Length: 191
Image (cartoon, rainbow, N blue to C red; front, side, top):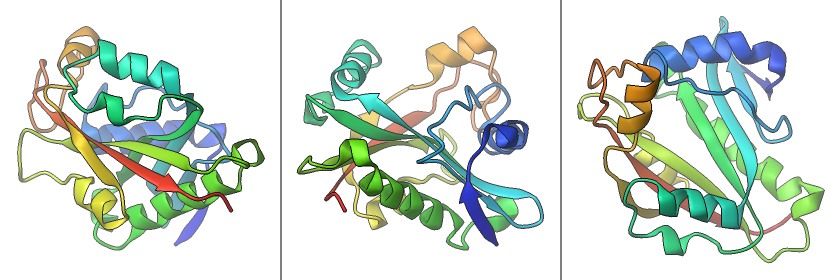
């Protein structure tokens, strides 16, 4: 398996992988910081981790204005947060460490970014999908094993979006989606 940085040329393959993993219409934007984002290739694209740098106060406002999330105050109040926007692995490659490798690369790249140096802590945030069908995979356990703190669950996280976008969820079918997310946060020390 080959792992390399994500480029905009990967966008179509990433959208196809995300839609296969989380349903039609849920892929959203493939905008990502190429310094923080990675793709895994093995007989085509088999995994992706798209990450961005967010302004902490803006991100806190987004969580505060969205669905109920009791632990949003545990998010950093200042500075920047690296947010893993999308993480997916093709079904036939799951359970082989692909997602763990991609997350580790995002974290390593985050600690190496010059604009984050000088801070005592670098925060990496991820929303782990909790499908309404418990038979479907979730990344919550992967993030826990990687040392992420569980900040809590946001119920029906995708409901409004799924209605507006007409997105079809593999767990819920037609809108509205009743899946939730588990907000995960890890604090890293700069390199």
